[in-house]
Image (cartoon, helix red, strand yellow):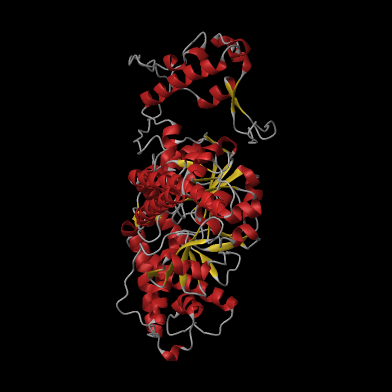
Length: 633
């Protein structure tokens, strides 16, 4: 991916304070848009100040422009709906001296080049980075499937690690502390263990049968692995996983780390595997294998108020219930702590509310759909949004509908009871129909579609969890999807800083391939000679036996020395992102990781944070060919 990046680094953007330009009469606006706006022509650096006046947006839209409605929409040449596209009313073209057909005649390619250059100058004059530059930056929005944002009627948002980004060390560190305290109270040996956030990354897979954590490529082949807290050698990986693939459908064995919330749990599991291997787990806890440790991690952590939920013979269903209890208890305690000191755990993003405000004012119906409860949601959203919104707006003013305690992924899969929250202290009453502006608990995605009269690909859902947010809304409802992955920013920067390392590594590999090709040809010539057959070329036939053998020996020595140079460099590739696991997006030098495959399969677009939408406008047309320049290629 690095060799495809032409623009490195992010650019600061200035948000304009409602610039409204007076209409300018231009005989042929297609020839001089930048000059009409008062921006400099390419290379001149000169511009005149534009006149400003107040414009009634509704009247202008009705008289000069029209928006394509659902009933009149078509499908464009890329298969995307034209709903929401802006059109110029033809009767107003004459007023501008514009003959649409005549002005499109001629060399359109040349016209487009001139206009694109002038548009670029106009963007620079506005202090705005063009979309091509944004794509090649840590704050870019990357595209797996073409998406016309203009055709989207509603945008739903998850909250935790989507609209609200937590300090991972603070949040997951405290979750780890609570979990270890509970394991300790059950008799597990936890003394001397500490939380290490760099031990695991998103996208790894837990092998609960073998006590391993693995990184797989897009086909499921294991490329790196760790048993307990110790990395396994390439040979050990080959011996263990040489004949089997990671299959996420086998949930009893494999557990995919979908989100940053998985970090603390995975660290605890790997540390407990070490203690089990060391024989440090007390015999009175019963006979335990690695899956039993995982069960204890999920189930045993629910030991609260003297009630021990762990049972080494418990069924899978009981494990699921116990894990839910762990979430309810541990996260309940942790969330109370966060509500008391949100500034300690939440990383503020002043651009985030403005991005959502642009979307709302562009006519998008914004939805908040979160698994968090009402009190926690209200506290976090107030802290993250209210201070950055204009004109005394509150966070609720942004959303057409708010749904808490949604119980995703079931929210996308089936109908559930709906309750309306009617008081500020969270009092609820049963409800059978949701309405715009409402605050609800529970319900279902089908209920949202019916109440807003929008369906399927008219809705974009944005979340951080590949399964709960992105996969299920895509599979069951055909909603458009966006994944938030904050680690993309660190991944991008690591790729940029390791560019020279990768270039040197690729050069060495290519040199070995050339040397290896020559060696293979000489080896074939030797094989044919021993069988009394001629070599494939006259030059090879003319070599005597000694010359042939000497050349092969020299090439073998050279390839061995190249291997000694390449092997540690290949092992170190990606260590700027994570020393154990390398890059998030790759499994090896060129191949995609299993995480990348999941993202490409289920997420139409993906980016590091929601506020990145601010720099693209709510009218952006994302095209899938852009993925050739993304972090995940």
